Image (cartoon, rainbow, N blue to C red):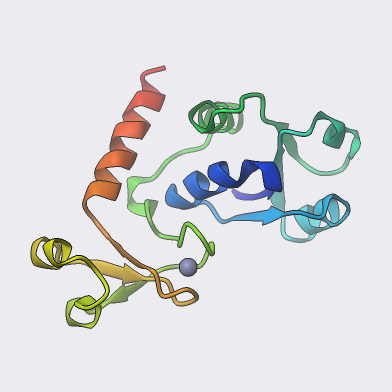
Length: 149
Ligand SMILES: [Zn+2]
């Protein structure tokens, strides 16, 4: 499942990408419906006026808090979270990450991270480096909390 979010849901877009869902943010509300249909994306919005648009699959997000927003989307759409998909996408660009040689990131990550981590990923678009570690632990904790609701 792919998503298109209105721009007040920027934080939620990062979480959906962390979970491996292709997610884009569209500022232009007139372009939004057409794009969602063309790219087969479910629209997520806080804007109740958006519901007058028909013909596209849309979820009106109720909460202002990203944890509750994510919980609502997961429950309402029955999303299955595959741990193998975590951090597959750049959380900023929605670009698929590619493996990076450890030696190639030496100058790009903190020394402690370089010493303790073996696997690194790079965004081909913005060159941001990702690694397993604190990010993954935070995400796992967050998911456990969501599932215990
Ligand atoms: Zn990126």
